[in-house]
Length: 359
Image (cartoon, rainbow, N blue to C red; front, side, top):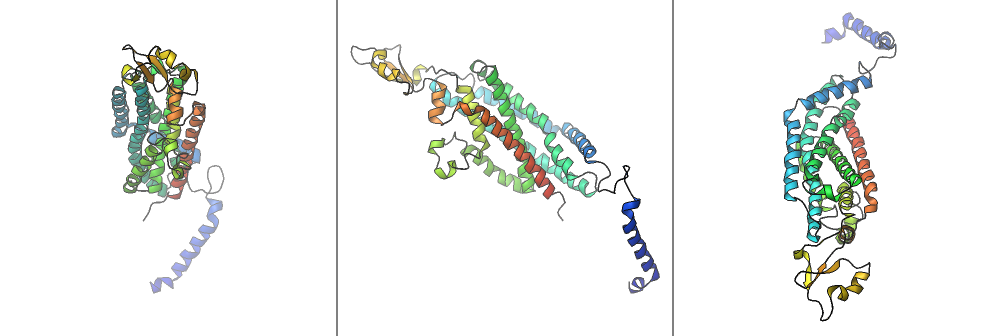
């Protein structure tokens, strides 16, 4: 080594390398006669090619595509026939609320399919990025775009499984039906990017699947259904309730489904009592039913007793039990879209920050 360091050959080679480094920016230029660049093609060409490549990978992955198809159909049918043809009685309102709560479960199942796929493709990306095949931005935007058709298909299949089977076809008008489909599809898109965010932040599958159950617990616990807003501790409802995307989904779909519903209590749902002597049930309850602020209604049953039904309309149910309003339906859709867009920015940011492979 000492002989090489003092040799004229080393001095010549060192001078040649320094000259190449000094003159290369002016000698080696791109086809557009611009300066030499990191990647051989433009960012938009990279984006288009990466998008085509990811679409091909998704299409040729039977475990992923077939898993999504089976999950959407089987889980949708299981939910649909569990809550088959929900009626309009007061107890059916609880059934309807828990059916719509299960929409969260459908979105969470989607995350468990998306997350491993994202981690696998990210490892391939780090190899390709180190080889200067393409930049980090095409991968970040395309890993989101490639999922959109699958998320829309997943949400639409689940919607079809539930719509006619659970009786939404007679409960909702055309606008309300489109709203139900739209907000659920946006929620699925949100959950897809939510899985991407968890995977891009946590870096490994082990850490991702450790954090994910905690996040799922937050979605369920602070959605306003398991524990209504008024009963929630002040600390939690002052911030985490308002930051929970599940709350906006559930307020949107539940108020949308119940806003025009007239409750018809079944015989077993009436609270029965005998009418006073000489009075009919309607006469006895006239003052009560004349006050619009009172909940429910009183009716004469077939056995001659008076029956009290807790709610007159679906609106009474969600305003008193859940403290929600149907005036917020379109606001809730906009908030969910904002959460989805925020997730996309987070995915792009963390892919940029973790674009290089760890040694």
